[in-house]
Amino acid sequence: MTPVRVAIAGASGRMGRMLIEAALKDEGIVLAAAFDRPGSAFIGRDAGEMAGVASGVSIVDDAATALAAADCLIDFTRPEGTLHHLALARELGKAAVIGTTGFDAAGKAAVAAAAADIPVVFAPNMAVGVNAVFRLLEVAARILDQGYDVEVIEAHHRFKVDAPSGTALRMGEVVAEALGRDLEACAIYGREGVTGERAAETIGFSTIRGGDVVGDHTVLFAGIGERIEITHKSGSRMPYALGSLRAARFLAGRRSGLFDMQDVLGLR
Image 1 (cartoon, rainbow, N blue to C red):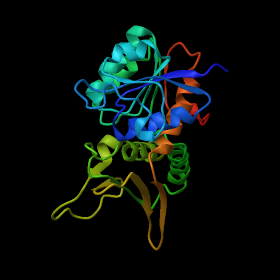
Image 2 (image 1 turned 180 degrees about the vertical axis):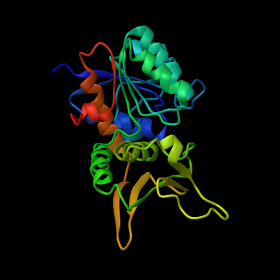
Image 3 (image 1 turned 45 degrees about the vertical axis):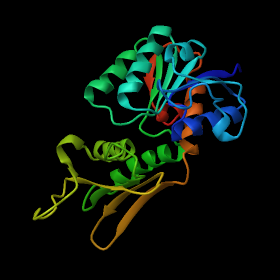
Image 4 (image 1 turned 30 degrees about the vertical axis):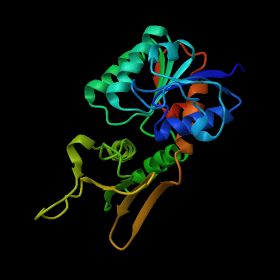
């Protein structure tokens, strides 16, 4: 199989560096380009420098030039930047793997619109383990559909800018769908003051931000006399990077369509 040429956005960021390191070790992937925002101190430096490897690919500040050299964009930046990069990928006919979170409804609609012309994997979490948890949550929610309160607890590093995390929200969506509920109507985001008794149909979210926590997620099903907890903890960002490269390989040869990691893993 011909290796997939990828262009990595946000090359100097925490996730960008991990993606570059993973790409340089993957025989099915070629690091074709790496780019960052104009003015970054890393422009012109070797993309593999921070991973201790000479890649022969310099970080550039021109996204269009970077994408022209690749088959697939991989983007974990911010919603505004991702949408700009996605528009360029659409114009150039390039595939896209999007791990960025924090999109509003209009942003999600823009991603879906782009997928009419190019193939896109868009997922709140690219880690294979997390996507296994999504499936486990679906099964658990159907079994524990009566007499159990549901709470989603997530923790991330101090630099994360959106809350709850995209993964936590997707966990809530999976549970709500399995229970036949509308998450938008039943979600409770934090509690303060005299809240009254907990309504049985609600799904609660609690957010922790601090230190260098990569990402911890727990869904708690609390019944009378027992608790069931389904937890995923990330020790590094590498699982997200490896899942993203798997998604890029999945898109090879596809002309268009909107996919997520459940599609990539054959779980749908």
